[in-house]
Figure 1: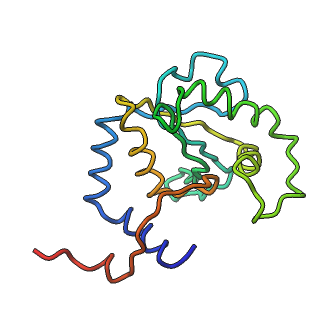
Figure 2: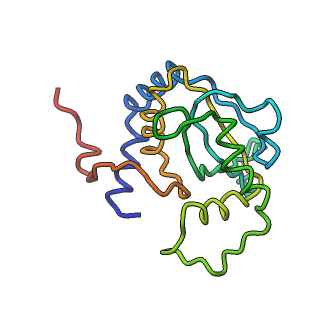
Figure 3: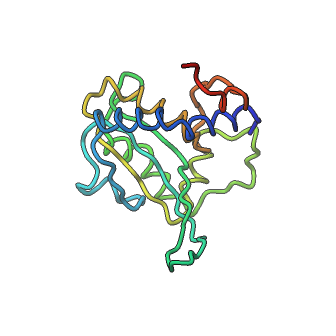
Length: 185
């Protein structure tokens, strides 16, 4: 990660007003997030909606930090973010999972990454490796108006920058000075 990307990431999460604006936008345009265990059979039931929306694959490694109050602080990792229901990405959450991700999950334990080198990795290569991690969750939210799905995905990608997404929106590099400089009144 370049230093300008680090400052931009810090800026996205430290700007309380921006975070509150995004939360309001998400509340107005997305249903509440639902979480299911990501496995090859997920799309065969009724858990996944036949509607457009935003989805994420989230890995929950077993590692945690024990807290003084007895709780355990786990660090989930958002691996991939996607969308369905606009002109660039037709279909529904259920149909996308069934056609694209269930086959990868079904064969997750048979992938062979010995011949894959970083510069040669395709999106499918990355997904085969990432979706083999366990425990893996599939988070999804139905979009109330499919014309907003691209903008919503773009905003989430700008903030999270997941490692399995091969195309990420361009973000303007920021410097430490622009991040901590107060807005003129």
